[in-house]
Image 1 (cartoon, one colour):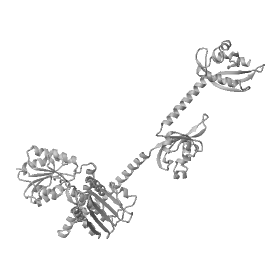
Image 2: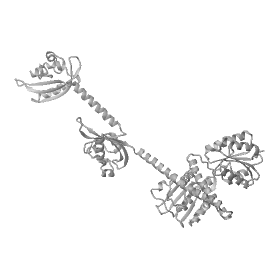
Image 3: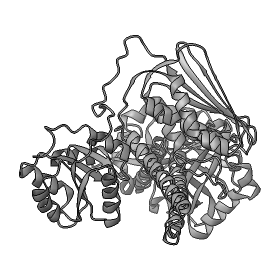
Image 4: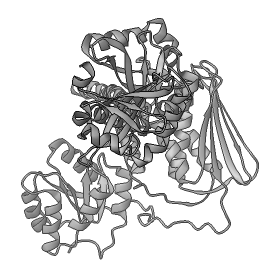
Length: 618
């Protein structure tokens, strides 16, 4: 009765494959009546791809009395569909002692489909994991031993799967993190929050380090019990370095602004003190003369600070122009030494100069090369304690080499690679009387490279002095000097020019007017654009010196109006802005020349001296 009413089907299969008995359950399992199934035979309904294997298993079972086997095969249903059937077969002896196979058939199609779907999903997941080569993905047991490993982990951490399975994941952590038991902390966070973010330095098989960023999460079984951990992370070293570089740039920017404020306050304080003293000088020529010297000297210092900033900006944007000519670098060295001599003498340094015999010819911009050497000599003097040693050596040949060395504070190994970076300073102490913005060496490197040369620094360490070496290509025989379009004769300014100064700052306007009048010129002043245009029509000046930023009408419009009136006056723009774009705009407006504030009065005098009668306004 159990057999007759079972949901499964039970059949007895003779050694020749005939079905000698089949239970009614065959109708529920495969849709056949017992008679239909017995007539078909046990193997006729098996899928063709699996029949040979099924027959082989049957023959094997017949050779093992009392043996059994289980298999899952495809069998054709009476409706023509293929169904997955689980067979449990046993070799039994009949009453005659002959072995027969008693087989139980159960339809497991739904279960097989679920298993196949789950396996397919597992395969897809494994494929995704293996394809994610940018991510290291691995699993561990509860103790942190690795039991799963993808190709991304091989690439990132360097271990093959065979090398790493079973090993503790702490092998990827730095000694410092292992000392703090960081791996256990990650596991604890993953359990507590469901997943834990992880950003830290990791160690590869070869010992190199990288910044890994990712997460760890617990793995649970069907009952919800935690059985291990999954970790996913990637190499974020470049992003980490970039972030650190941005933070360093921000720090250096803040530091530079603090230095700039400090450097600007020093000359401003001196100028303020001198101007206050002028108010109480009471005709004391000695005091007045000292005050004027201080104001001129400190104003020049402010101008040099601004020039350094402007030069850095121009070189960085590729807008600096070199006036190259064949020159003897010995003369450039001499000019630089003359500039720095007062500082060297004030600090009682011993300065020695040794130049190779013969010409040290280079093809370059004398002013810019002197600027490089002045920077190097000034640094040597500033960063050497009083009474120190400074030497300048020069050699010629296929390349011209100038070496500036000192016995000063030296450069630490950490600072040496950064010494030519913008705003980097070896000495950041606040008690230096001779300051700087930290742009001199950067500018020097750029200027030397523009000349096709190179500059390098060397130091044995803190307190052991420094050495800077400038290498420049020697001049070729066919090097041709570039004409300086603004260069003319240096005759003294011709007196008696009618000049118009246009400046909205009364102090600046009056100061420039008095300088021009002291040179013998007749000067009128205007403090806004409209007044300047009207005054020019009545004065008919030989030259107009106009600020750009004016109330009522800017300097560009003033120039356009004057040109529209047919004025033949020389138009000179005076502005705090001197980039190439600023100069282009002034040229387009009608200005003939563009000067940067504060005005270099010697250059202005030379320009006015070159006016000819044809250039003078009627």
